[in-house]
Length: 84
Image (cartoon, rainbow, N blue to C red; front, side, top):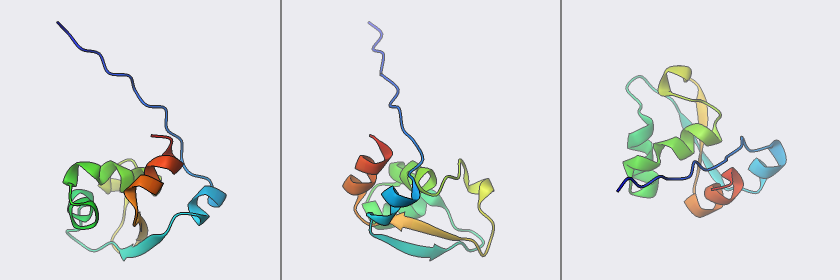
């Protein structure tokens, strides 16, 4: 039997939605990886996409050395804002 999963409908957080989420700034360095940040902040590298989605960057290739990205501290709050 094949099990189908529903695709969640998410949106990019607005400025007002971002304002209620506590974040920490991270200066992107050569060798930085989203999955390493997810492991460090959430204990699970599979949540790399939360950081990417929150920052409106589809992949690490869209982040340049020296860019500042923001990491939601509480992943449950991030899920709520992202619509997950």
